[in-house]
Image (tube, rainbow, N blue to C red):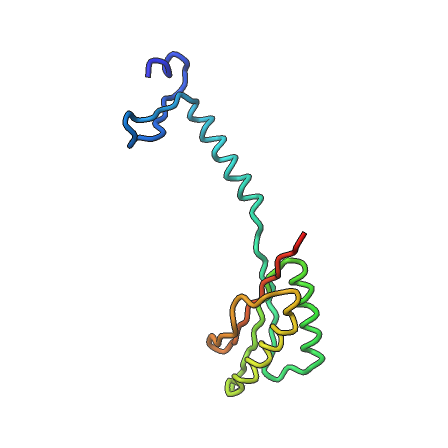
Length: 138
């Protein structure tokens, strides 16, 4: 404590459970500043996950299906996840099987650029499928 006081620095306890306790003589304000700076740097380097949403119906026609498929393929190659949902309006809920078939067909068509992260699941009036991009080999 006398050494820390003489150097105008702080005595920081690193490991209180050790025998004897481990302490370090440092400038505590600078230590906190450096720690905060490192955390900010790590946060900046972390990749942000973007989720793009595509909505289909249980009676989506072939042309519309291909059109949306092309968009989903572009999203996956750009590195975004794709959330595909089939929305059932009113009494269309009786066509659950058609919705599941459309989603599985969609996943199969995107097999080269993405992998299924979450299989089709009915949540209320929506049946949802999530596709994540495949890792690029460099």
